[in-house]
Length: 200
Image (cartoon, rainbow, N blue to C red):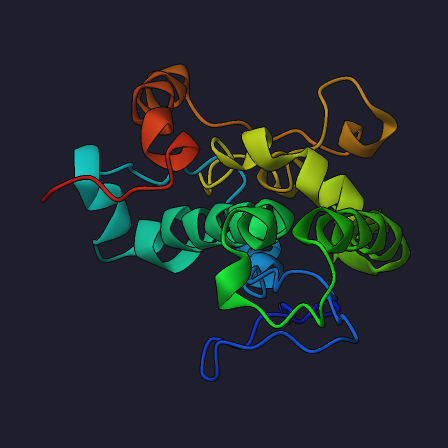
């Protein structure tokens, strides 16, 4: 999979924003998905036990090796930061060097640039049948809600990448988490929606 660098225009070290915007995308940290595909192929009927509550973020064994709750939460946080930058510029223009331009003008420019670049930047992942599938950053951003339930190693890689049920993308998928695990994930979903780790 091709990495996309998260490079926001705002320089937190100097509290400055250059006049030439450079918003590239998000770092999708799912490199171990190839290991998951191998694991699913070698253990087609084995169910990885799911820890209870906050332990989904800190455990050992196959869940720790192949589940991605921490990574998916970081991905959601990155999406929130990227999507919230234009509003942040408008609400707190004192934090940015706008070159004398109005915050509303800069916000509009950022939104246009974000929309264009998110549609241009692409990456690939390999589906359950090992076929490559290409997504744009815009596709991934539109799937943010799906990543709230996409970290279980008992699900196929298509579910992990928040593919839409019934889509062509989902056709190779034949691996699903048990119902009791999905029910618990639904209870924990608020942690991901609000992008906050639960207390231990």
